[in-house]
Image 1: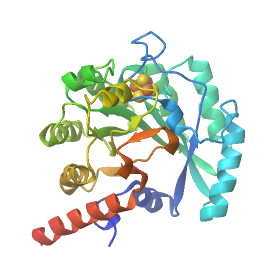
Image 2: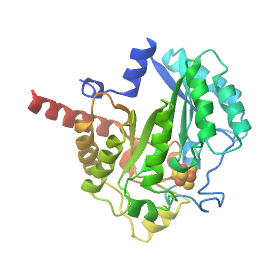
Image 3: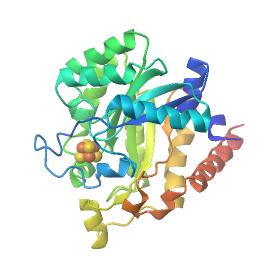
Image 4: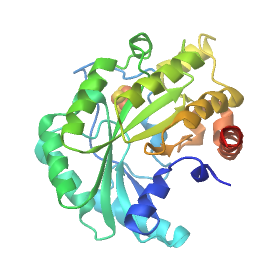
Length: 303
Ligand code: SF4
């Protein structure tokens, strides 16, 4: 048995829709974030160090086409994959001049093997112009996903981690994205400062109430060079332990409707040398098997 026996994983959804396994190509664009450049704030979210997304050996000036070519080659050798999604993860990838974004998305979709695009961003920088652009891409037949970083539906927590946006901003973004029929995947974090299980599940429920198409789970990582790392070293923040993570995310997964696509249940940082904790996140397999056992148990009870 695997997680996909109990819920709809992103891989499963893509395979059913496109007839074969599709892989994501992580790409890094020349963008920033309004919570870093002074528009919303300086310094960003307390946990943010975008370097943790960048592989060690990657030159930050590498162009998109070059990134695609090397990623495709590597993934093809490893998995024999033939089709891919361009995935812009770090920073806010809908934030910037429309012309630049248009060229960026177009370049990423140029190779025949790229069948769609996933764009990571924050709820307060999804303009109607960018949505219209993504809608045109969707209408050309590409798979299009906006990955919205929400992390928590509690404004008190959003303030504490210096997100610079509210839950109402998220609701507004989801409503406008859905007017275009573009898929939304919401990112949630378990283990945020001051949050207990009940609060995380409330966030998940509020996200479900918005009718999003997908959800992605992360444990909160403490990464070097962040405000959270300072809080952690002063003993003001304690990381979530593995069993608690499995318990909370497991409960949410058990209740997640089959039509909601689970993009990820656990994340790791790309650059291990930046990770201060929780160190159990370096090995995702015990989490995967813990979640699987949790889902299996719930499934048995239901039948
Ligand atoms: S919104 Fe994203 S990129 Fe911007 S500071 Fe927060 S985590 Fe970093």
